[in-house]
Length: 539
Image (cartoon, rainbow, N blue to C red; front, side, top):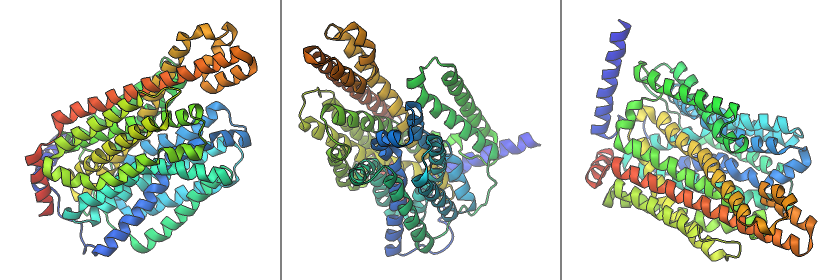
């Protein structure tokens, strides 16, 4: 009987998914939709909450030296102060999205804001790096509860004819939030200590809490289906273990026992998650959704774009500070034109999709991104700011053309009752892609740097070669210790090798984006299907 019920549920899900594809969206949630002005205010509130959490993904990077000086944190502890946030953030997105659908999106958002704000406020008085890591874990959990709710609330309250434009605004904030976080953090560090970054986060959390309480309407899945507890557990274990392996692999080595165990265990849990979701009556995320071309292509685009862009931030900030000698604030300002390009071009994306179709727009966007990465492969230790400006602006234009349509493709592919899960899928792909980007491009960068040092080992004393290979920071300190003409040659060789590493990382990024473009050509719907889906959503 249980087997027949499961099969029946599976056939019902397939029929429901086919109906969703044919009709464009499910019936809207019960209750009168808010008016135009209130919808716009809600969108603004969601963007404030989104900016608050996205900026903390990389915004603390510029403060790590000060944190180490004040708390005595080791290099390993500094790494986990950064990465514990992203690990928990990515791991809990799917279950948080499902719980918001089931029990109420506004309530889940409020709980997440309270957790994030409390963790940020507590960090103001922390001196122990281990406690700071714990607080970052709590903040990451709060962020996982916030991010999918911001998007699902936007897609729920906006009618079909306005949804794509609202999602474009949300995507622009998501794309530009990391850069804004770097800029704001750099500005705060010019005047205050690293604790001011957490103080600003706590203040934004309090503001968001008050605005959400007053302005945001309530919504949830009207069917009130049971939560898939085992699916949630498998997804959390699988994603956390895989992201842990991605983070620790470049540091410990991919053959390290803990890394291999995490990678194998995480993949096994994710495979178990897929198999369980195919047979459970009310899945957390039905894998059959990936049969929908728009859903699958949107997910792939966001992963690939996030790999390239998060890796770009990681590598370029080091280049600007170490080779160009920029302060954290100036380094952030130097990447601001990229944010301007994202904000300027992003509103055009929905119109281009209507005219040319999802396949053409997404493919062109990723080709533009690859071209921008190609410009950045020309940088060397003596390059001016001009190629940095051109390359990052071109990359930003490509990001703005692909992220909003890809996000809209994901959320529009699923019924209104599943917007929390759809939003969580969008966010999981973004966060996992970001972790992959830092790991993959960071590894390419490090291997390029070490290879570059090896190519110039005739300029480096044998007893200093190991120190120079470890990092540019260590190499420059060693060059200063050696002094004289020999020290100058060591510093020059290290800087040249550093530029070699940057070029290799940008080449890998361009190849990753090119792979994404090829996948889009195979999976994304063409113009006729894209227009038909948009017209049905309007109707």
